[in-house]
Image 1 (cartoon, helix red, strand yellow):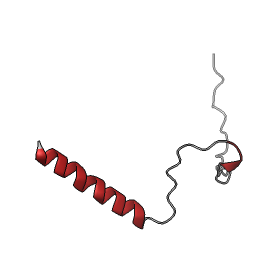
Image 2: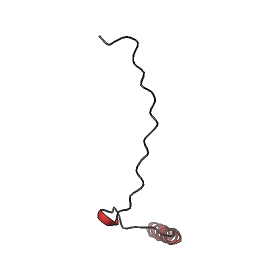
Image 3: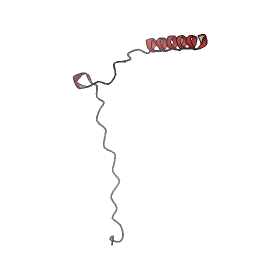
Amino acid sequence: MWKIALAFVAFAALAIFILSQGGDIDMGGEKHGAEAIHSEPAQPAASAPVVAPDSPAK
């Protein structure tokens, strides 16, 4: 049982160390409203020319 507790403490210490070295990390969760940061809108893909079928569908 003490090994599980020691592993948890070691993992928590490692996680806190990595997060503290990461720079600007927002652990606030999902944002809504004015504080939300949106990425640029997606660019439309270059569309391929539409080719008509050789024979009409029956």
